[in-house]
Image 1 (cartoon, rainbow, N blue to C red):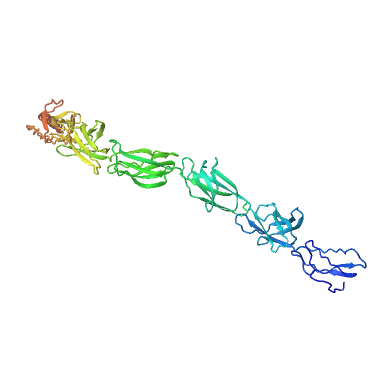
Image 2: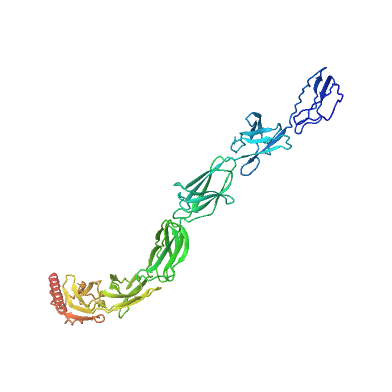
Length: 580
C-alpha cells in the first residue's frame, strides 16, 4: 500500500481478469499502466487487503471508460452544395434521448461535437437557415469504438421554392393568347417541365422552383400566330417572396395584299403608279411601292389589321387620285387580299374662238354643242364677249363642236369643228369658227317739221345693211331755223325702221318797210334741193307729202309780201290823218 512494487506487467486475460497468488496478508493496490485498446488509461490505484488466514481470493473490479469520439455535421444547399450557416440542431442518442441542443452551423455551415462515447446518435434540425425549408428528418451517425477520426455527417437543405407566371399576348393588341405550349428549362437547357399550356387568361404558373436561372421555350404557337422559340429567361431569387412575372409576345401570322391598277375606261393594266402603305389612321408604313408592268404591286408580311394604300404618283398621262384604298388583313388569313384602283386619263382642254368671216371681229353669243365619239352631247356652250368658249376636263379622244345658234346678224354654220384631245396633252387646243353676216337691210326715215309737227320738207329715206352706219343731215329751209338736233341723226341700221326728226321754227326778225313806198314783193326763187350723204350701201328716197299749212316756200314768200304791203298802206293812211 506504500507503493512498493510487488509485481508488474500483469495483463488482463480474455475474460478481463488478472489473478495474483501467494500474497502475504497485507494491503495492496493495482495500478493500471496500460489501458486496453480503445479505452482511456485510468492510473487511479485499485486498493484491496489480503486478510490473515484468508481462504478465498479477494475480488476487485477496475472499470475503464472507452475512448470518446467526435462528429462534424456540414449543412449545405441541396442544389448548389453551398454551405449554409445559421441552421439549428439538437443532438440525440438513437433512442431520442437529448444529448445536446441549440447547436448552430457556423459560417462554414458546420457543427462539431466532441467527447462522444461510442454509440448511435442523430442530429435533428430544429430551425432552418433563412431562405430554406426546415427538414426535421434525423441525420443518423455512429461513434465507433476506438474511433480515431471524427464522424462526418452532411445535411442538405432545399432553398425555399419560388414561382413564375408567364403571360402570353399578342404583340400588337396585347390581347391574352391561350393554348401556347412551353417547356421550362434550366439556364443550361436541362428540362424541368414540359407541356405547359397557357390558360384562357394567357398564363402559365409554375411553383416550387428552387432559386436559380431558368427559361421558357415555346414549343407550339397559338392558332394564327408565328412560333417564336426565343427563350424567355428569368431568375428565381434566394428567399424570393413573390412570383416572377414574365411576358412572351407573339406576332400574328402575316397576310398579303395585291393592288391592281387599271385604266378607268379600258380596264388595261397601268404600270408606274406609286403608292404609300399606311395604317387606317394615316401613319406611314412603307412608301414608293410601284405597280409593275402587269399593273400590280404586292406587299407581304402584314400583321392583321386595317390598312390603306394612298396613291402618291399617277402613271404618265393619268390623273392622280389620292382617295385611300382601304383593306383589312384578317386574323390567320391565308390568301392575299385583292384590291383595285382605277385611274382616269389626264384630261385636256379646247378653246373655240368665234369670229366674223371677213373682219375677224370676235363674235359673242354663238351657241354650240359638244359631241363625243359615243354621241354623248353637251349642250348650250356659248361664246363670251371675246368670242371664246373654253371646255376643260376632256378625256383623250375625238369630239365635234357643232354650232346650234349663230350670233345675231350671222348665218348659222352647222359644219362640225373637229376636236382631238391627245393622250397626256399639255397645252390647250385652239380651234376657230367663222361666221358670215346675214344680209338684212334696215331703214332710217328723216323728216323735217316745225314745232307744231307740220311738214316743212320732203322726207328722206335712207337704207343700208343692218349693223352699218348711217348719217342724216338737217336741211336749210328758208324762213326757218333748226331748233332741235336729233340725237339719233347718226347711228347703225337695225332690222326695225328708225325715224330721225329735225324740228324747225320760224325766223322772228322784223321786216323794215319804207312807209312812203309800198313794197313790191320780189319774185321768189326756187329753193335749192337738199343734199343727202347716205352711208355706204345706203340709199335716200324723196317722198312727196302735201303740207297742211303752206308747205311751199314760194307761197310763204307771197303771203309775206302781201302782209308787208297791207301794213305799209295802213301806216300811210294813219300818217295822213294826223297831218290833216
